[in-house]
Length: 97
Image (cartoon, rainbow, N blue to C red; front, side):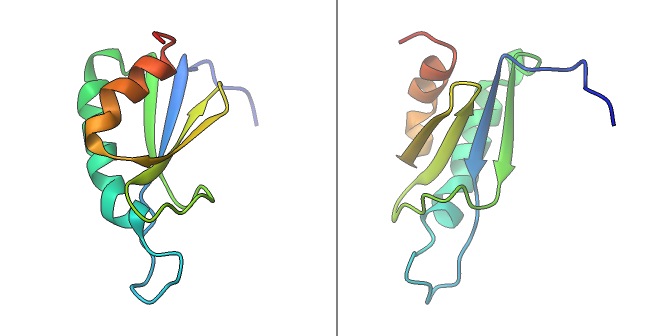
């Protein structure tokens, strides 16, 4: 094992975990996560060396609508994120608050 020399300024984790339809936690991330992930990838295409976007399994938040997003290294966790929120999420992630 060795440390990687590739390190992004920001790593955005987007939950795309789909739950069964009878799961009491519902499947907000499974329904909304893929659209958020795709919008985030499109929005960061020009800065992919500084901002990494990764689709993940469960982040532990399980919103009923939208999806959960974690931003590192800021240790920020957002819930109910929808594709229209992507510009604001990226502005927050990159420090343009």
